Length: 121
Image (cartoon, rainbow, N blue to C red):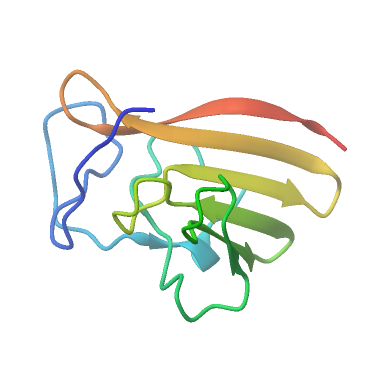
């Protein structure tokens, strides 16, 4: 997984051009499985030190992930490089559909989410 830099004032809008507009990070609680995709932009993991729903997913001894609930889905957001932005998002919807996404920067420096797994439980 590639690392990338996210600042509080500048994240890309998911458009595949060189346009960067100042926008807020998408809060983990605001993820909608129906609309999440390659151009969803940066996802804010939140404060992993105070959430009871936070845990160490990769087993390195550092809390990196948390579980949140959206309208009809359980969402796990993970920040493996500890920069405050999600590196992986996994969603399980109420009907059993699931998808897992990882982000990276493309050749032009734009943040892109790639679906790495999907199916039905």
